[in-house]
Length: 454
Image (cartoon, rainbow, N blue to C red):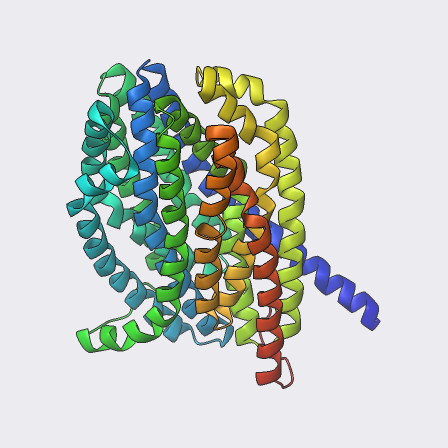
């Protein structure tokens, strides 16, 4: 086979591998997000805009704890993937075990701190009166169970590091199945409202926990013995990756909280519209959210194998794949904007915000995708702090000034437009910096590329 044909074959394999891993992972993500969206539909059918707005406020808070788990997963997945790339499976098992235990400990502490601060957090978000009371009650029920979700997220990262897209996908699929079964019974039939939604969330998180840990035990050698000393020794290397990754992930909910506070000044209808758009985003772009997690182990394995050339190709192909997905999904959202508004009984300002998201704003999500993929690369190539800086820049300088400026002209719509438009500059910046990281890594790891490839 000629060099040109080999290059074409490798590129095709990489793009196909990225697509398969992302699509497989997105099935699980979209399953849970679709049911979360249905959860919002059920709440909206209660005919109480206060409860719909409460779900919007609560989503901004729960995003914090979920983002913390995603950050931990990045570090564990990167360390396990490197061990696999070096063909050291006992080390991979040891890193998986220590990562899960440390993740559980950190998760409990973080969730406890959030729970204690909930009254202040709800007030800062701008919720008042009965809306604040409903939001606080729902969060007090949900927050203690978030560590279970964090462990499940770390478990899916370990499965992806082993290249097991199917079992990683099924973790959240089973969580979605449980939620789908319990939601209508507890919210509508038992007429428990937000309490029913929280109880359904408990069942879903327990299912995610079990389905994440079982395949690791059954198919990948289980868990290695650990001691307090080994955990302390593992904490440093893990947090060198997960620490910046957690800070990176927390930037998004911080930015979302700021936007929620701005929109709150326009009333419950505006918050409800923003909440619906927020639930539509992960459903429409679940593939993109999955892409950032799925491509990380591909970078990590090829880094462990010394194939920096394939790291560069995987990065370029991931961006290409993201662009194709976003254009296609934005077209579908635009075509379906009417039925989407109808199913939520959206009227007035709420409907205006849903229509704004379905098409025009959703196209700008590509610049967020650029940041996601660039961050995944930097996290796996030892430049996690760079990801942190880009993400915080995007959700502060790339959000607040634009939202304030355009909001002063166009109200709640202007705030959402400013939030989306501010990502353009930081999307290009993230990609440019990522290519610099690749070039630097290539210089420092000069040698013959051999070993395992993705």
